[in-house]
Length: 331
Image 1 (spheres, rainbow, N blue to C red):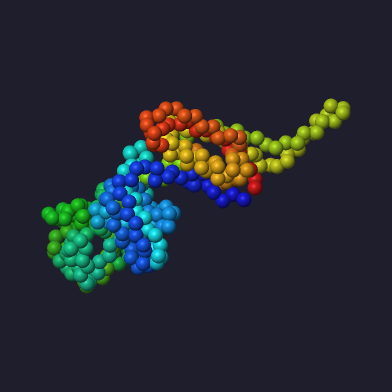
Image 2: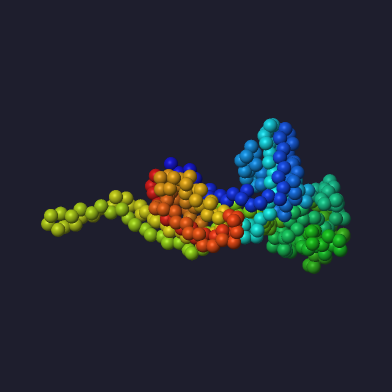
């Protein structure tokens, strides 16, 4: 039965890179923050191990100028926590972009945001956008909600024009004038509204370690062959009769990667070995070849590995061409 998925489970071993610092701790069940032996540039350069098992980077964050690893849940008492700092070449990094939505609400009581207080009091017209959304580009990335009702773009101004906080505040006032100058005289009072909120929509980009073959697609494209399983009967008189063994076609995929490093070659080879070659089936994520869906496959034939050239004895500086075929199955 298929359990693994290609390419996400074909993972690269970040410990193949030379470490700049290693530090170990014994967890006490309450501590959540652990200092790295040396600060890193981004999360992908911090490798966390619990009792020798590498942890997914989603389980922790970096703080203190990227020198401290903080876990949302404290590691269990007695667990061995090992933190390794490495330096990643750019070709082993990837930029991931994903949508984010942040919200900041205001009411009749003072709300402190980024060391400034904001209140619906008939005087305040500029309200802070959510902390962390400073990259929003304009009014189309902002939604102002007053008393639960989303407002049109004409009902607010962003950036606000505030002399000190223009790029991080939205000017919101009772639109009594066509220009929405939003002077203090137009500020919403407590008698008019009780609450307002600002939502910011933006894309967050993170630089991270190229953890699996998910981010390394076949650079020579791919080949897909589709066949139907047909049973053919030939009579002595020369007549031929055919019927389908299954109405579902089976597809065969040929993938090839050129000039991949020893780390990527090892990721594919380890995944192949774990399936025992053609023996065990697995899931294949079709988005890896720009198709839709997931299907069950197994390796068809040998894993083809050719060493192209070498710069030194490290895995990251040896380069290969790797190719293999996948056969769709109906396990």
